[in-house]
Length: 379
Ligand code: UDP
Ligand code: GLC
Image (cartoon, rainbow, N blue to C red; front, side, top):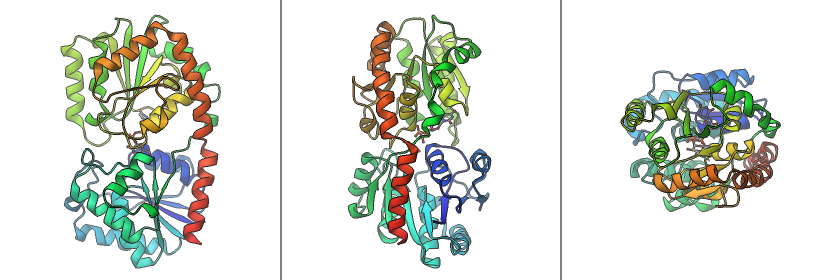
């Protein structure tokens, strides 16, 4: 099957990393991006054909209105280019909401089927009413299938007016081979990072953005023993520089400089997770899926997540990890202290999580599931 993938971002967020894994399995595909960036390089490194269609368009991922950014004058030429390209493909696969806008128009022009991979929770915490209405209307009217990345994303889509019969939940898949023997990286990576055996390292892996809640982990440290430190892996991908300044100030104000480390965006997430004693996910708004939660499980590192959205489908509290109320640094600290005090129990839970995650999120099985439903759309 020949698929034309569309994604608005040139930067590797979770939706883009998920697309990369799916596109890898379709050799006759093309990925069109509406912005240039490191994500293009990552696709090229995997020998996935990629084309950057418009570098002049401002594609702030979290911008609340689609209309402002996408005036029709800017949209049409892009949609026409996509329509022209799509004639050589069986299917247009929109991976983000702005890609849905362009893909919907293009699908009308080229009479190709449209699939929308929904990576977002369409609620007011994430998107304006107008934005939600545009996404739902276009999906209802033009898409043959909406792949929701979790039941939480599917429910929000339906609650916002989306047609239930269009939707199918497919979780993100992960390449299990990348996690085999990852535990052997623990000591060398800790050494390279300068952590000793006495340090209890809580890792946070996410782009730096207010709703990802890095500030909560910093606050939680004040309720933990001195030997607990935090490592933040990730960068401000979509222009959240003020939040970065705010985090740095918070660390200074709380005199935590010696216990907090920001290491920026890294491509060796699995190795870094294996080096941590606990991975914390702290989103303040419901997480649509939460790749980092599954990645921590696959690494065999205990994980604590914010109890909302897709995270509730990934973690069984006290069995495969811990769930704490979003926005509560004291409860988060309590879990950290529990893992610090009783590492063997934490390890047991992490081992159960690792087995379960390998069974539920195997990329091979998930890619097969996606292929089956796409074949039905094209057929
Ligand atoms: N990630 C990465 N390098 C970093 C920080 C994060 O490669 O420095 C990856 C992380 O491993 C995960 C993705 O970015 O696969 C983030 O996806 P998630 O679904 O957790 O959140 P999103 O940012 O998409 O909302
Ligand atoms: C989006 C969501 C994230 C999800 C990812 C992959 O970026 O914010 O929760 O894990 O897509 O589906």
